[in-house]
Length: 410
Image (tube, rainbow, N blue to C red):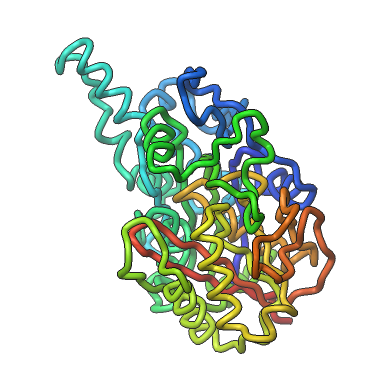
């Protein structure tokens, strides 16, 4: 199973290449909220927004009004990934081409707008496109229609593990012979009044309103919560022989996929990271690689006190002494936490780290927390040739996923 195309729209770039460049140079995409009036009454007034994004190259104005922001992001990322992979999806057998794109929250902006309109103007003013816009599966559906993908059409919704679960579902679809090519990833557009207000109410968000770019600080002793962001990422997964026959450019191999359930708490991880441990262990077993083969982990690393501690504990337990030899960083320090899109974006970061030998930094890491004595690639990218890398994604509800990527075999 190989990766032959990449596409992303994020707070730090309108393409996979721009996003990667921001990651390795540590350019933060966190700033004050512009999508609604987050005035002084708001306890949290910043986020990772996708700014100045113009979808007119792939959607006309009429279409844009019929599609929620998250699905527009999904379409944009898919367009880039399709161009990058070089496959003509209008040719060949469309039933061998599929899609797996999830969203943690879906069209929440559409829901909020619809409710406000109903309260002020009554139910006769409800937009007839409300349901097709708000559906969590709208991103996958729109991409399927746009590229004539008539095989498996999958939409996952497992909070912050969504994007990785979608990639895992695509991986397994090709493994069992049901597809040759799958577009996979996640999309999210949850920088809305309800989401910002709700996450702030549960004390999950950082409140560094005076220094937004310093707010997302995974593994740092002074971290005080995550930063909500938005965007989308899509990768093209392809069966190896299919890719080889057409002379495709291969970025990486997807070697294995593991998942687990915490069965502990709806929003908090088990203290020792038991679910994260089992997810990584399952993924390594699926990939048939040893823990000592892993050189890099793109961490879930949200900048929350409990989440970071659980992940560090799980890594140290699973990898033993090798934990101090590998490197682990969190690109959420740069762009914040895009919820259902995070697994897709961070898969691209993991793939590019393997391809380039450059490990993206964890910025804002000034003083690691007590017991956090691993190589977190603090503040500056590191050059290191890595053959095997993991991408971790853990979500509310106790959902844990790990993907194992490797450099292409000769």
